[in-house]
Image 1 (cartoon, rainbow, N blue to C red):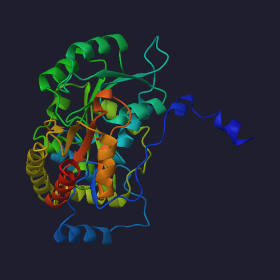
Image 2 (image 1 turned 90 degrees about the horizontal axis):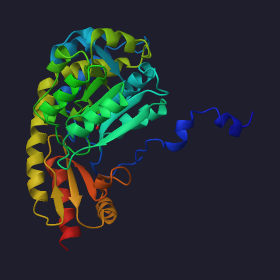
Image 3 (image 1 turned 120 degrees about the horizontal axis):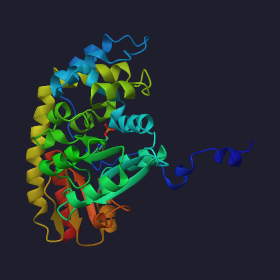
Length: 365
Ligand SMILES: Cc1ncc(COP(=O)(O)O)c(C=O)c1O
């Protein structure tokens, strides 16, 4: 069999998709991926290293991640069995797409719905699993358009709806009353609220999980200092969690990640919280700095990044920043409203100073 004929056996949806690419060698100031800019202090490293030294690397991991689940339940709420864990929340999105892929009766494909613009992986992962995706434009304040969402939920009857709040890349939280109205109005859809950036907004909707069985909460350690260990989760009704568990690979979370994540939620939680508090204060400071440039408009942010519209050639601006070793995120395709925008992760005060110095050189020569 030739490669050409083997290629015909791949899912047809893959033809229109491209692999998610990440630059191999990041520049000195990395403000493009919404990671925490802070590495860990020495004592935190000591704790991690002493845990790593005790780890039985010759054994398979605890397939249930017992201690980590317990730490999640203690820190966020609910029972340990309400959590399904993944290698980042990216994997959890994939588990949902695998497990819930039965189309509704009368439909050819399962349907996923999300307001747009939003995190690209909801669409990419669902499409790669054969789902039909429905995007509903956010209103001009980047909030939910309840009428349009209601119509789309009625018409499309999605199995799953995703709401990132705070949303990536628009950086705002959606109005709670609007979100709750949609969740209450459509109990036959699994409404997944993605709180990847929840720590920076000072609010969590986790109590809705207990109130509405159709509500699930997605979470991750990636934005608060542990992007490298790849730990994410979904909290949902126990009966639904049991079904999702059936498609999870038994050892998807390696032992080191489980141990470090458990520390992140327990002994290291005050350190992470201090970093979050610093980032929130720095976000305000950076937004004020950016407001000095007449050609930049910064949208209000509840996250660890800022969405900024540039009244000029955005490609050139990103190139000029990169030539000064500063990476920010730009949007070359997708929602037309993002065409002139860049997304800037809040860095350390030193990172942000370098950014502002570079903007002075580029925008005010
Ligand atoms: C809204 C949102 N959800 C989830 C993720 C992915 O998180 P993880 O690193 O846990 O896969 C991201 C990453 O950028 C994100 O922006």
